[in-house]
Image (cartoon, rainbow, N blue to C red; front, side):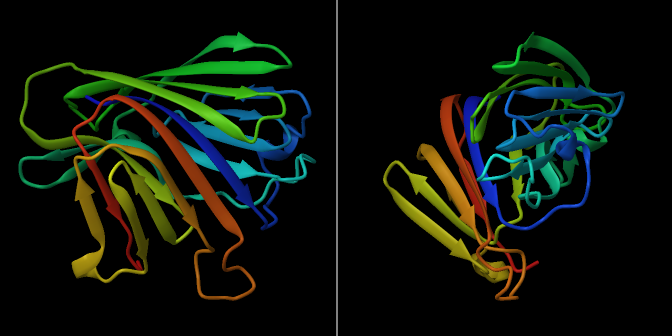
Length: 236
């Protein structure tokens, strides 16, 4: 299992529909928890976790810190734990059953929550926990992940999958840089065992010049153990 610490920075210029993010305009860090989701916001940054279908489902930002958060920079699948079984089928934490949330720390300056009971699909082989932190005035969140095998089994991979809305992806590997932009099916991925300390994505989800380039996300990684990285990008 991979153990990693990630810092996610995100900006967007698209207005969003009313949601729980609008209830956390800042400048202090605020927390909303229900039976179905947990959300943190500070005016600059809003992040939400779907507890019923375990995944980080929402990541929004407002450069001006007014709480007018832009579009979600995550695509529909969000950030999930996945398993590729021996037949090549993909299983996801989003279909594994409900996760649980615990408030680790809560103050106007810092909120930390821990999400547990996350598995790599139904009858999963691994269990994961995610610790998410947000500080007042921060334009990024902290995400610490840690997992272990819970039963014996065979799999091609157990992995984390980031689904970004922006379509131009840049990966800064230890030995070089990879850019992927609207690649066709034969050239839509790049796999490497090299370390990847930073990955970012730019651009809107379509070809409309009014929206292209107005969304971005940056991820910085500090990995203790990892089996490698695969960067993918397609027109789909």
